[in-house]
Image (cartoon, rainbow, N blue to C red; front, side):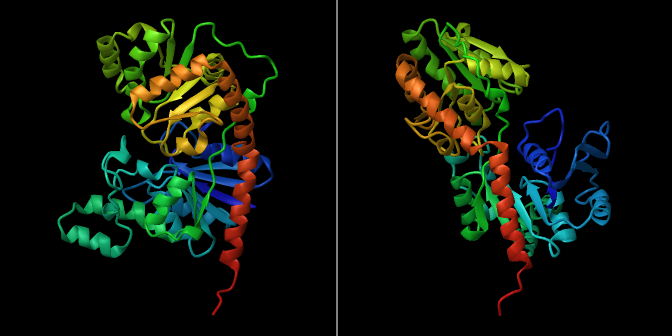
Amino acid sequence: MNIIQISTFGFDTRFPSRPEFVLARTLAAQGHTVSAIEYWHERTQPQIEQLASGLTVYRCRTFGFLSYDLWRFSRILPTPDVIHVHHLRHLLAYQAQWHWGSVVPMVLTPHGILHDGDLVVDREQPFDHPLTPENLYMDAAALWSSIGSGKHPRRAFRNFLIHAPLRRYDGIFALSHHEKSIITSLGIAGQQIAVIPNSIVLTQYRTPETRIRAEQPTLLFIGQLVPRKGWDILVDALPTIASRVPNIRVVMVTHNTSQLAALEERTLRLGVRSFIDIRTNVDEAQKVILLEAAHILVAPSRYEGFGIPPIEAMAAGCAVITTDCAAGNEIVTDQQTGLLTRYNDPADLAEKILQLLSDEELRSQLIDRGKTYVHATYDPDVVAQTTIEAYQSHISRFNSPAVL
């Protein structure tokens, strides 16, 4: 199969775990031809680069809302069998529909519909306010109405170019059933939406050696220091945890330090700074070691479009606690593959952590079931096969003559 995948910044050897890059590599390894198109945001990279047999990346400059490079590539690339767009908010999708939409089927993976700042009041805590679908300009009438009411023309056109493609795709691949329900509420027919999760490279967790847990009870947090990831919920739970487990250790791994000062202030005020080890420069190999050493991965998120750390933790044999909200509660089944805690509730989080630290038998059961589940569900070959079957279904429908 000849496939075009279009993303924003998804195909970079420095970030091999990006979901669209994992899918592209897996499809190419299975014998398909993949042309990956993205922004040319770092000019030290070649504009056209072959990253693997069957996988070539084409990088586009943009001028305003359009890209001459995308127009040029559309004329030199062979006609694909299907086009797969990743992420809702970028400006190549509308133009891609213009070039290919009447020729081949096009599908979209939004990668977190509630990351859209036009659809939510607060991207960090999207469940705390009603959604605002009226702010999405999905057709020309909405565009011109917004301009007529005084909206800034450039912002209005950008909004339209981002959101108008949504109703024009032949299919949408939601990452979770919750995401499917949100997309359906925007007027997309449910039969057009398939739930296909991201794939995660798990081969590094298939080691046969017995894992040695840290002697000291250790909690692991992996995520940005932003409200959406719930770092503050974990910090607020720590005084209760430390009062019962005085030798508790919390390792916090982050590459985003935007709220580091707030974390420092909060931990000092609560008297728990000495329990926390902050790591800001952790590579993939070090992350595996941390996951295999920790007793519990704590992911108290207020929203996740998908949620990679809990999956990696289960693959590494680390017990998981996450929030009972999208999409963590579709990755973790409470009392089966992990524990779910109430939304935005430090007291409940502390209780669940203490329960799991004290119940070694339960922790062992969750670890065994979680590991089996993630390898069967998120392995790249498994997800790629599901994706290919979905592609083939859309290709068949697209090429079938209309029934009069």
